[in-house]
Length: 264
Image (cartoon, rainbow, N blue to C red):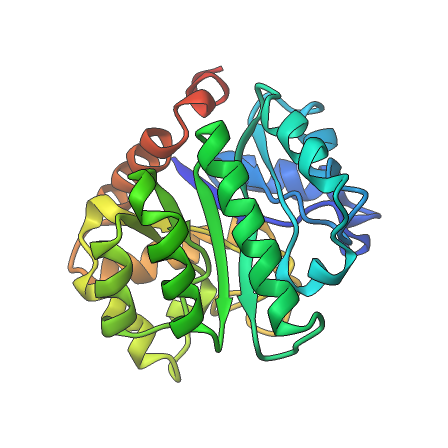
């Protein structure tokens, strides 16, 4: 049994077959899904919650993605606090910095990231981090505003190498590997997976993006997380059952509220 710890199922790419996609995931042994609630940005921040309310085995996050940081308004603060109080919203994210596209100014991304770190700290929720071509600033802001809280978080869709993995682990983060780890041209990510302790690894699809081999180039979906699990097992010389059991336990330790949906 596996958990897809990060998927975007609310968008138009699943508009015509969302229910079938979810059924295929369950048939593939994916017991629980964490739907990420960034959507198209403010003010519509409950997109994942709407899905989670429809399925007992789907849980949600809420947050403002760095791409949408320029849409941030003061009203986002009470809205996020309210959403994080819902029993099926288990984390804040994905949040962070993205300097590849710079869809929002970097200074704005940093200020919105910091504001959300404070909200998560106040509400006691784990954070889900997106960082792209922004490792230095991401680590600096986390060390200033998050590490002192002693609270957990996830480095989502990990794209760094062993150095970034070691620093993330030292800060107390779990590392979530996506289909990228199956790609031949991702040796740094693969080495990061090798050095990451099994009790700190999560699996994700980041659907509909980044489908693993042998589905690369196709729309990704939660059922494909099995392929990522197989690759982690290969890299760490473990069985698929070992990886499934450990990553499930890791997820439920981070998000104990989701245990009801896993067993229900």
